[in-house]
Length: 324
Image (cartoon, rainbow, N blue to C red; front, side, top):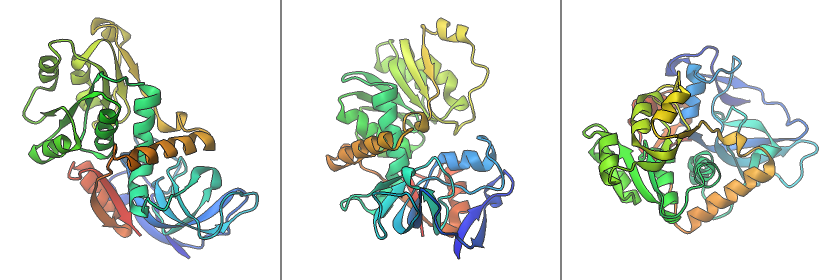
């Protein structure tokens, strides 16, 4: 018997229900994972609200750390008692235990705690592919990061500084601005008090920035367009402020022959080998202090609905972890 979260309809945090189920033995190619910490991510909100359609009823969450309790047939390289982590794409991490495809699991090193792994795996691998394989940011480039005080944004600041980029972070409110400054950003813009595009143009002597990481979407789209340098790239990787719709190619031409991409992590982490390489790079950046995961909040697993409310209200800072 194990406790798992289920949604039978899309909607607000109240649709998250907790049920007790009999967990079957892991099938071929599966691992039974007992969770110790579960990561909270905005994609969980998208699934709950139906922004990203999923078949119902459904579980939530893709990121967790824990221990191998049982191994199905055909699984090699994992043994009972191993510490492991997973970050998807399978959902159902909001659970005390679950069966997970072995290809989605990675071993956790001794110097990375379960809570850090749960806070870091999905967001860290997102930062890795955005910076190094999607935008391919180069030393000396000026980069704008929306939501720079958030879980991914916080990691992007440190990662970009480590490779020699000039970082402009955007955050809302004095506390979050201070957090982004402390993370190492060269410039921080408070979007509640300043015109973002105007400030970006002032910082760059009118040129704009060659790369923008925009995890907000519709609410920031116009400001991103107005902040991008000629032939610059907007990486729109999230919809926290609503999905970008009605994009016209003529707009990209008028704004300076811009490039736009809407990437997702699991087009960059397709195979177990790609996942392992991404995780190894994240842990390497963690060890040299380039990224410092900030666990700003901890919630009990059963309080996942409260965690969703806080995340959607912009009341969280850094990463949030659901403690099992």
